[in-house]
Amino acid sequence: GLCTEFWGGGPGIIEEETRIARECGIRIEYATRVLSLIYDGSAVTGVRVKRDGEIFAVSAKAVVIAAGGFEANHEWRTRYLGPGWDLAKVRGSRFNTGDGIRMALDIGAAPYGNWSGCHAVGWDRNAPEFGDLAVGDNFQKHSYPLGIMVNATGRRFVDEGADFRNYTYAKYGHVILNQPEQFAWQIFDAKVLKMLRDEYRIREVTKVSANTLDELADKLDGVDKQGFLAEIEAYNNAVMTDVGFDPTVKDGRGTKGLAVPKSNWANVIDEPPFEAYQVTCGITFTF
Image 1 (cartoon, one colour):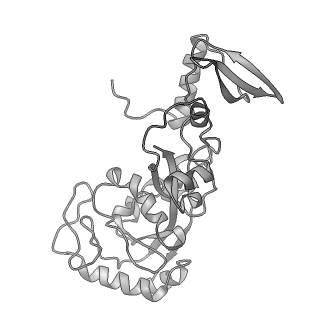
Image 2 (cartoon, helix red, strand yellow):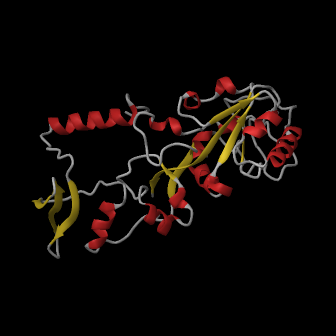
Image 3 (cartoon, rainbow, N blue to C red):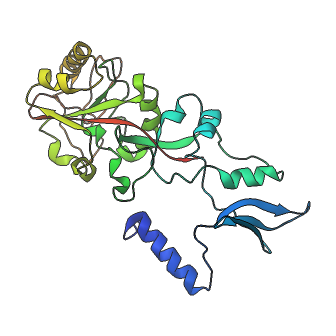
């Protein structure tokens, strides 16, 4: 009975939920914004809404607030998640600004949950500020275990091979946000290019390629060239080439002697063409 994937992704889920709701006789009012809960001191008896410039009340036996988090609210992100979070991209809707949470707090509801936490991933540096339904999830860039990531100083800052991407991608967005200028470049060589996920092949991508590492370094916008070349030389020299490479398991092919190790899937980056993809932090939802 487990749903492993939904046909049509997020839009497909909404289409199916809408169909079921209508079959059940549920009325859906679009372009109708809920402003506040109607509270008589002991119970919530409805909501105040605004539609076409008119504000009016809707009575109800019960009100369910299903309004998401506050990931699209720059002020709240800074207040609760911390400094710098106002600079993150928003993967989803620009309307998830915490209105439902605020309405509940306004009538005395108790704050609950992990207010300082969120789900955030590596997201294309030049993606729009909010989600684009035409592109969907494809601004994400999750093949980093097959390569390395460097920041503006040209240095690696995280163990790209600590685990399969399923177990690291939701926390590495925060790590990227904490880097100088809030970006990183993901670096790959020809040995793994065919293994990159489909999201690397879309038209809307921040990508550079080169036939030498020196030429690639010149194209890494915002990166210290000498720092990068020194870092990639140190990384290449540290790869445990005596251990076999196998991207289907945690292969233990790591590095030796580096301050920031790579624990699995380490390959010497030496085979052209070289490709690099620039990413920043994309917030998915608050906790």
